[in-house]
Length: 190
Image (cartoon, rainbow, N blue to C red; front, side):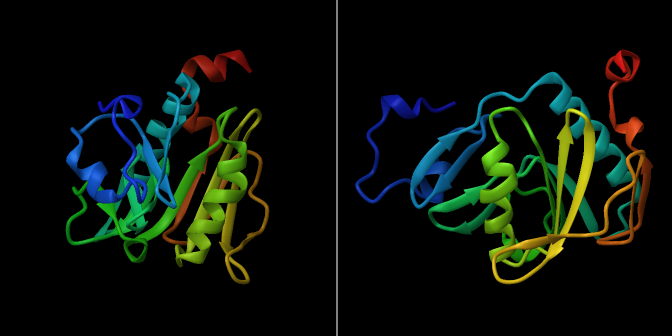
């Protein structure tokens, strides 16, 4: 992990070249016009929902689509984001970053400190760069909101999702009980 406080900020701001020169880590570095943002560790519930949703999407995603978690999308040399989950169409799905044209679905799981990013900033960036599908998962209470391209750099919400099931036809058919993406300890607490 790189201690961004211990290094001098480049005069033109940070770039993906800087990120590539750092050792691999589990820290989520994102760039906005060369400014570096580091996200705090997500909660146990956030991670459990992400892992369980990943497994269910991965089980039904048709070839050649690939489902991946927390991998960078590079919009420009100084603009990146790391969605919680992505569905990509790529000849190299094992890479550590994707171009927006390779991403079919970006999924964000809201955390207490990420409401503005997950509700406004990230969807605007994703829509502006042509990512056709965006889902936002709210945890308290558990709810999935499905968005499709709207006008300009905005998504519009698709038909409301059933409170108990996630059932969509795009980018591929998905039909799962929302309770199945909760860990056992969270289901027992309800």
